[in-house]
Image (cartoon, rainbow, N blue to C red; front, side):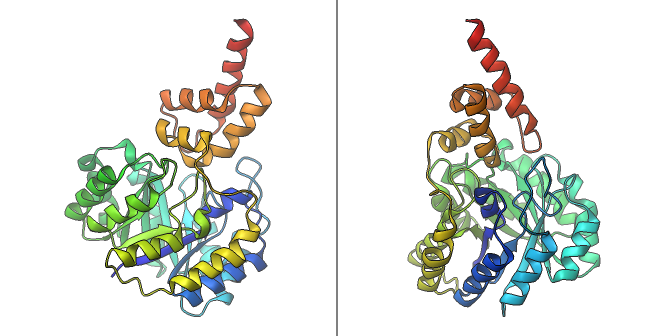
Length: 334
């Protein structure tokens, strides 16, 4: 059984500057629930507790978003994202009290040990725990599996290969999922970004290699070129012989009639998104890099390629401006 998880109301927040209203969150969650989606991720795009001048202020608090979604659904679980160093246990308790019953604890792929405290706290308070190994392309399958084994030992019930940069291709995605499947007792998930245009293909490869939780977002709404598209995933999975127990046409209706009017721009693989995937950079660098390019008069491609050469990861967004300023200075001196 494959469980399709929708992250339009969390990863998709990055595409609308975290400005969905609680009413819009409720409308989308209601439609997803009616279509058969049983896990819906909600709140600030960077994770709970991230609403700030650094990451962008949201239109409502995380607890308000969660409460709106919980009140709108009948059967779906409401999930939140927890990033150690940004999120706090206090923030987690607040959204749990608002009705969230699933937490997805996300760490860089080499830093699984940072997830132990929130995983154990969440399990102690009765929450289901999914764990994200972000930027999974940075580690070869065996090394990634070693990190996953730590999460397994802490009590994570689902462990995700997360292609935060959209840098994987199907063979590489499948290899990482297969390595985790051999190494842990937990279920395996896969979260795709579409910066190389293969998000859905990667998700299909992940399922063939043993993943049973697959993330998507309606219309692909998400950071960079967006995520694997929920309604397309549902159709492709069905064609591949998998029963997701969702109503494909209901998903299409929510995507077309509820999400599409809220989008500020289409999710496409443009120059910046493609360069993100090619350079292996965190997808949330997409908008900040474009803003820095405009401010400093430097091609966005050059900024992203230099960031890639420096192996910058999520949490180092300040480097975007530093690199843009350095490149601008160099250009003026020539």
